[in-house]
Length: 246
Image (cartoon, rainbow, N blue to C red; front, side, top):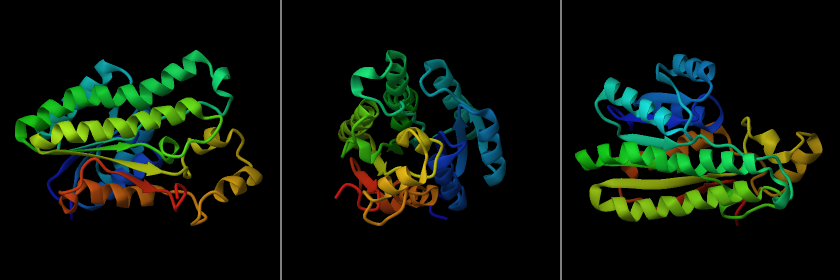
């Protein structure tokens, strides 16, 4: 019960890595808000773990404000924030990615971190403690062709994590990131363009341990970084990638 009596918001928790993180947190005693743009998915996962479902568009300031207000109404405080919600554009030469796709990727993957920080950081400062975990990607460390603007958004998130960690450390707030390689999530097909056995084999060939990241892998790593066991760790972008970035 490493998160006993802790409260946590996990965005993008209706599926994939976010669901894995939410399940791990609940298993270890946390009260968890499962926030997702998909109301049915959020409700289903919340029912599964006894969590609090919340519909949110993390790229919309009013929606983020409503999410945080609901959490405070339920718990009076927010101990942990996991910025997991993310999207990508389809693989394409960088100059051929539509402007609307670029805007949406940066809004969901980058602006969302700013919007949640505006609402959650002041609350954490008031109590002098808190943990923020940003889910970045190996794409921000070792970019792959044809996903240029997605790569850039995750590189931004890694830099934002380190900048936040330095500024917020005096307030007792730790900020870290996780860099997964692609996993069995709704984004996998978009990463590959076409989900075929051949494309999967090519992708897996770049991962020394020979498999994708799983929601359970991410849940275990997130659990450690957000627990008191990691109280001396801040500003880290931990790779959960089977050696992909070596």
